[in-house]
Structure formats: structure tokens, C-alpha cells
Image 1 (tube, rainbow, N blue to C red):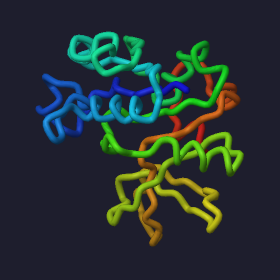
Image 2: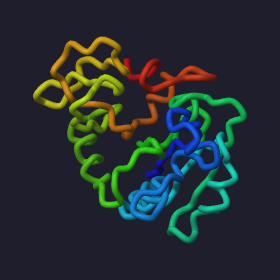
Image 3: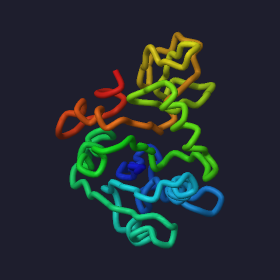
Image 4: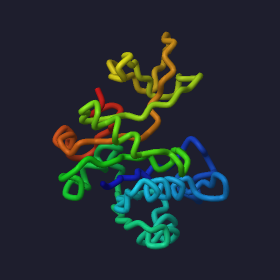
Length: 199
């Protein structure tokens, strides 16, 4: 299996912090968040990683190179203009058309020990085409909020609601397991999972 790690965003909400460093390169426990995600992939047997770049791309490419030092193979795609979370994946269409693949938001910290194999087993058991990892959060006003049935099926999804009148606290954690058929649902050009694909 392969993983697409999204690492192109500017991280504008962090202000001056991301003027000189890409948001996925901010360190947690002495290592960039992106490195934790790459190690997580390797520990779960995912050796082929596709990373999109835009903001300060050379910092990421210089740090990780081809991925050999981390036991993985990294390919990069530079976006002169941001394509959105789904538009990026569409660019990797030829590399992703044969089997399920992971999409991981490169600036989200999951921890190197997150079990992607459990996610795959859940995905296969549910015969899902698009599995979304959710996380529990108290303040949901700035996150994608999911409404979930007892069997795990998501029945509704509101991206960053302005007026929160719900007690639901399951939010989009920024990781998906996706069947290649979903690639047919992604429009060419700019496309966002939260706004254009998931609904």
C-alpha cells in the first residue's frame, strides 16, 4: 500500500512561526511532525510515500531526500498553486489506481505508534470505499464535525461549523483510507475532501 502525505499548506494561522519553516516541519518531541508520520508509515509496512509540496518545499526535500534514511521511498509533487487536499491526491492518480491508499495530513500529529493496520482491518470489514479517522474533541467549533451511527457509519459531516448547536464531539482527524474508485469523484483542478468529496 501507499500513503499520500499532504505537506503543502502555508500554516497561516501560526503567523510568524511558519514564515521560515513549513508547518509539517514543526517539531514535537525533538522531531518534525512530518517525520513522525513517515516513521508511522514505515512501522506499518508502508514504504511508498507521496508528498505534495508548496510552501518552502526545499526545506522538506533537503531534510528527507528520497526517504532512504527512514527506510521508505519518497516521491514529491510540487504545486505552484495549491490544489486542495483532494486535488493533490488526484495528481497522484497513476500511482494510486491499483489498490487502497492512505491520505495523511502531514501537519497532524498521530504519534509514530498509531496502528494503520487496525484501520485497514476496519476498512475491509466495513467494505468501505472511504474510511475517515475521527478524534474526540471538546471544542468542535474549528473542526470538521461528524455525526456517527452506532455501527460507525458517518451520516453527516459539517466542516468547521460557525454555529455549533450539537453535542457531537467527533472531528475529522486528518487521515483517510481510500479505495481507488474515489479518484473518479475528484474533479480536476482544485478540490477539497471536506467540501467537495466527503459530502
